[in-house]
Image (cartoon, rainbow, N blue to C red; front, side, top):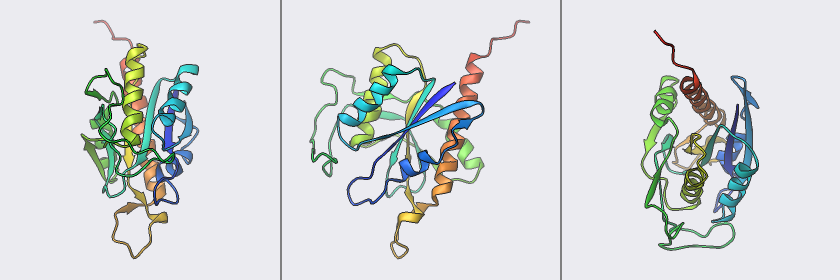
Length: 212
């Protein structure tokens, strides 16, 4: 089994992006599943193109994208991507769309196919802050998620895919600032737990039903 996990490069005023810092610290193998990672540019279009190119050239059993949601107070499992690009700040290429559709004739919204509720429950069992989110925003994170789900549907690839937002990492937040953050190793641990839940779920669905 192979699972692709993505993180983003730094953007805006952030010196580093904890999503990639956490992703690159993940074990290369989890429960006999090969974990492959890639960093995406924070650019509308090129970030999703890099991701879809990888998926098109390789066989993965699942895809989890991650990104930073500074200001959130938990690891958040995204439920929905919307067909809209509306940027508060320019991306790393200087592009700042306003009220633009991601895919002109695409559906208004597409749902994650990750077991988000089970992931959130597992994180809470391990005393890690976790929430389910119904808005991935309208920045590059949402655009990547929307294009990912649209691509998988168009190519009839029935694999679990979705997005996890992480908060700031404590190591990169000035101590005097009143901003919620988590130690980087806890963020990495949270992502690893999400992967383990996903592996269990894939295995459960693939097991043959026993006849009576």
